[in-house]
Figure 1 (cartoon, rainbow, N blue to C red):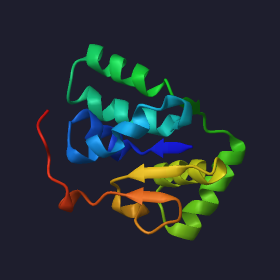
Figure 2 (figure 1 turned 180 degrees about the vertical axis):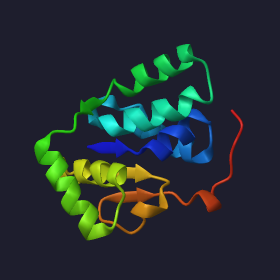
Figure 3 (figure 1 turned 45 degrees about the vertical axis):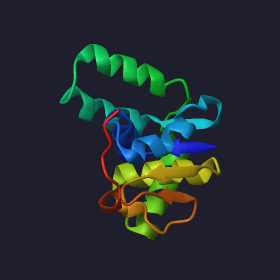
Length: 131
């Protein structure tokens, strides 16, 4: 299973080389988990960058994966993850989801660099590409 972090969804939307790298993951929705906090973060970003029609289409595409809601068990796990790895709330929820579902987390968020089950892309080493 895989989780594409908000940072990589945004890179995908912006047609960057990181977006290209996660394309094979996005194209396999049966293996894709989408935490609700990721839907929130991506929607919030896109609402400032594009039309509401485009936002709805993009969010619908994301929802082809299995959407994982935040429940009490995941909340408690996220609190422990936050304490152990010094992650902010949203990041701890995303990482706790990856841990709970034994998923690989694909991200360009430096806070996750070096953590188990994380595939990190360094934005400073990736160049934007036009499509």
